[in-house]
Length: 87
Image (cartoon, rainbow, N blue to C red):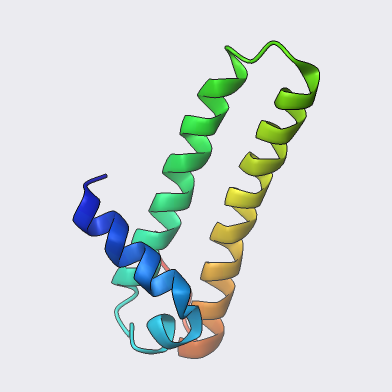
């Protein structure tokens, strides 16, 4: 993901409800969902190289949090717009 897209996503996350309210097409929501999916996949790759159990648990919790973030973004967008978010 390039730096400009990532910065836009971070700006949207700083005021999530406003960003999703102003996103009738779902493009911004899909970008956020894709971002969290990407960082979850990258984090999962870290599990292959992590030796310490405490670190493995932390990475696993991060992965779960990234997937939870995807669900939150979808639910908020769907509640605001009354439609399912196609990703």
